[in-house]
Image (cartoon, rainbow, N blue to C red; front, side, top):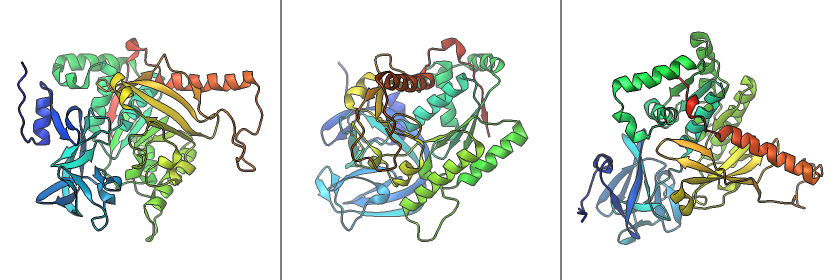
Length: 412
């Protein structure tokens, strides 16, 4: 019979215990298991004080209030009440000068909530970094040079995800590789591949489009490396190049989006990034462009936007739901499911999925002058477009290439 021990643990102790034990945490609905432990680097701390409790968390930690889920930075201690084990309470919140190591834990709960020091919290990690690193690996398999710029996770953490993927090894088992075995796998890959993945880390809120522009020039001169695609992790924690004193967060994110798109046009290559959903989008199985966090300006600027959601049922069977929310160059409002392997940091094609029309007809209220649906299509033409879009998605996700894991990583 298993022996259960109830005690208060630090996050470091949780990590160590998860290696050999089932670890559960308290929630508003009882004890629930912790499924993932993800280190997200060092960030500026905010201090939350409620009753006699003081909690340090990042700006993007989610707390449950009487008006819904809110990021730490959006809490208003003059208006909001925060949910604790003893009901909704008044609190104090302020930004500090301290920096803390941030950890995101995922829990097996339909609302993804749990108690942090007796306060109801929400795991925010859906897997945007996992998705981007997985697609980056796929691009290298297609003989593309990839530049991965991270403003959130460390270079080492991104490289662990990539190594887990290319070695086809669970991320937790990477540390079990002997030095000789690791070098054997790495050298085998290195000898077979001419293309590379370059990873560059910057602190949050420290860079804008000009930094990436200069980095691309520097890599070309110093390392003869010219990227075919750039991943930025992620837009919301960058700075705009042009900034006015009176700009709010909406205008800042809008400027960042516009500057990054301008850079993509200038360099003539695709740039992929991610944004969070707002609190209205958390936990929803269906999202749209209005659920984008911080600024709808991102939606107006991007050429293609894919929404990623995951219901509790999908989480249990290891799947994401992807929907094309915007596409300047073809059909949108199309949905597919994809497989996700959290342990090997990999997203793959779901053979049982197909592109489905969520909007089968063009709205009669479409703006005049809009070219969306302006040219009537026959059934064959429509099917051809669906098939072509499906092939694009399959091309990105196809990972049945166990004998082709041949990539090389470089740090910049």
